[in-house]
Amino acid sequence: MFLTPKEQLAIIKKGADRIVDEHELLKKLERSFQEQKPLTIKLGLDPSAPDIHLGHAVVLRKIKQMQDIGHQAVIVIGDFTGRIGDPTGKSKGRVALSDEMVKENAKTYCEQIFKVLDEEKTTVRFNSEWLAKLTFEEVIQLAATTSVARILEREDFQKRYKQQIPIGIHEFFYPLMQAYDSVELKADIELGGTDQTFNILMGRTLQRHRGLEKQIAIFMPLLEGLDGKEKMSKSLGNYIGVNEAPEVMFKKVMEIPDTFIIKYYELATDEHPLQVQAIQDRLQMVENPRDLKLQLAEVVTALYHGHAAMEGAKSYFEEAFQRKGIPNNIPILLLEIDKERIEDIIPQLITISFIQSKSEFLRLIKQNGVSLNGEKIAIDDLSRVLMNDDVLQIGKKRFLKLNK
Image 1 (tube, rainbow, N blue to C red):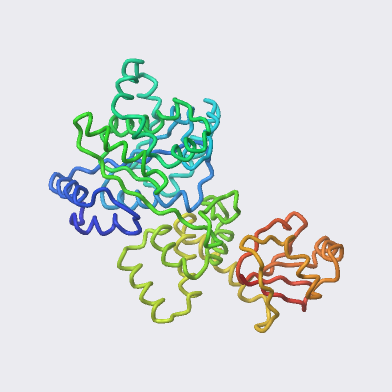
Image 2 (image 1 turned 90 degrees about the vertical axis):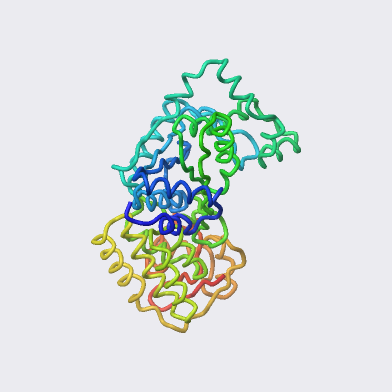
């Protein structure tokens, strides 16, 4: 631990939405520094969605930053809680996962998290190790530590209760079980997204009830996707996957809105807070955002694929998208809705006489005569969500820029 507690605190605070509480965290860091004993950082993962994208990786990147300054991580795979399913943000309870599905998803998760975390400073645990051993009496004692009124403070439970949507008694145990993980591990810090606020604070409550020092709760913001509006999500098609090819990752980073450059530097990279501030200063000095976004694409791609692969992806991007012979002054089509897909704009293309008919457009696609940003599109690409500044091309001379 070569950084002072205050220097460590500055790194931990970068990009964080909320810390409960900062004064307690500084005291833990001071004690850790004096004793040269690393803090235990806990992250619980629900193995129901094993494909990790940059939105999932926000908390992983923060843990990696804390590993780099000397602390240890414990990743808790919720194989036992996964049998219940965390109902966070859902209008109804999730279907419980089978043991086989939990194990398969957990394996996939572990393969991906070490694209971010330092494996030597990470321990992976499964909460069935301790939760499966609790007796019924111990479960009753665990339930006695809180009240129904307290559990119903959780926003999603409130909504379901008011809307008379059934809530299973077993669902009330999810935050208690996650809190018990913190007791078992004697966690110093627990991280999660802002959607995990109730569960993580419950960990502080249960630790205090068991006579332990309370964990620090660090909440990271949810990262918007390529559309700059919705939370990054694979189902919305606005995601950047950590397992995607470097060329795809580089191009997608270049597609984020200019207004999200700093947020991506804060949440999707390990850049020092002072470096991020310097980049923000450059933006305010009216430096071309495209240059800073190119630098961001280099940093993000190198984090997941290494420097050599990043250089290859950058060269590919420059060749395919910057030197593709697209004229500067081309017609612009304003997209009518935020998430228009290629198939949605066909009526507009006919209206402005860019194409004569839908059948002609489909025929040209089948003949490899239609491109988006220099890449040929196929019939299967018609459901692709369009981004700001995409360029649609038919043949060699007909271009159309799409703006929102």
